[in-house]
Image 1 (cartoon, rainbow, N blue to C red):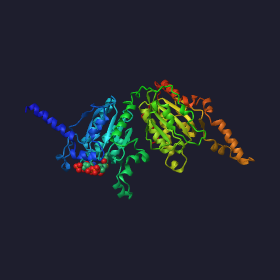
Image 2 (image 1 turned 90 degrees about the horizontal axis):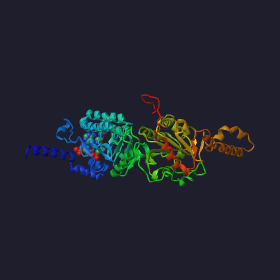
Image 3 (image 1 turned 45 degrees about the horizontal axis):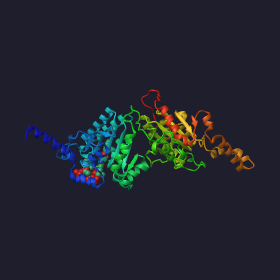
Image 4 (image 1 turned 180 degrees about the horizontal axis):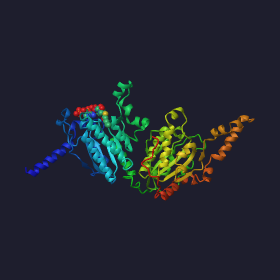
Length: 517
Ligand code: HXC
């Protein structure tokens, strides 16, 4: 063999070793758990043949615990960049077959390099997490690398979209990188997230809880709201990631992407004419209003199982990506509570960071009453949503379908906190509160002193409804830009958005606001 051949052979050997990861037995173990390997995941995530690996030959430099006898090139994480639908993305995939995907110093620094490159180039970053956490043998060096990642996640927040896909364990402080990123996608059954595991909990508090109940996908989808999407398996999680990326701009300087649609922009939304029931206490599904209005009925709902009294998600309107926020009368009558306020506030802030216009459907009877809400801090949590809407400078479109009562009227993208185009359906009612409650408060004495209190109460309720249970008082004050037929919602919103696309609005310069966290 020539010297050249020897050198090429050496390179091949090293690359093959990096690709082999922890070896066939561990790859088989990974497969037997229903999980793909890091490289298989990247293949599915990225456009065919687009992946370019960075740092395949990085090795750890730990000498403790005989680690110098177990060095695997790549150090348990496959990093690089590729494209999704032609859009450049940076990505890393932890390789559970190498030291359980645990994060040592160099493993962490490889991820940092990816985050730095993504930020420099204004590209989204996607992390595929599957890791036993801090590499125990490397001690504080691995904690240092974690913190370097967290710092970069924060620095990139609001500049490039960051997505975390959880495809295995994610424990301890390791959860804080996904928590800072914009979206978390978990795989049902094979991913777990928690700060302290079941054994530590048992020792400290004597509580007994399984891995799945403590930190499985459905727990985080329904109870904690930590995950934004749940997938049945690795393939679905990666497909969801691709779909999400297709809706987003690559960075905060770009406009949201436009995808031409065959759905006519002047299509009448006939199903909406009779969507709102005559009885104001009767629920209905606001998702029908969303799907009828947007292009092709396609709505990518975010956190669909959490705080279901508010619906948030992405859609397209006349081809433009929009963020949709909607009270859901089907759950808790669409009241705003702590969880709903936090859920929607974070979504509104994401959209505003990335120039994604907002379309808000309002049917809200108010904030949820109750001591647990008050003690839980509904005052400061509800204020988050108010703050997020008021702070947002993207085009804001608002459709009031029925109730817009009390403080919740103000909060839900009202004209007063700078909604740009606000309309109502004829079924809308804009008031401080519903008729029954209002009459009880302002006419209590009059009802009590009347010869026929029940008849008097009914008369006063009718009177109140005639005055306030409609959109016309608000329209006469200019608080609504128009009252439209439900069937006109799509055409009106498409036109309004078109006229607002070049909107520019500035807020006073400051280091950052002080959102009530
Ligand atoms: C080093 C680790 C490791 C770790 C797993 N491995 N976790 N090596 N550091 N943290 C190795 C195992 O030794 C094993 O190596 C291989 O990965 C696979 O692990 P198994 O236990 O065989 O796999 P499994 O049964 O699937 O269990 C996976 C697991 C378990 C649930 C993740 O390994 C586990 O509990 N690991 C410890 C988790 C943990 O406590 N991490 C620290 C959390 S605190 P071999 O050679 O046998 O294949 C933390 C702080 C972050 O992360 C702080 C940030 C600020």
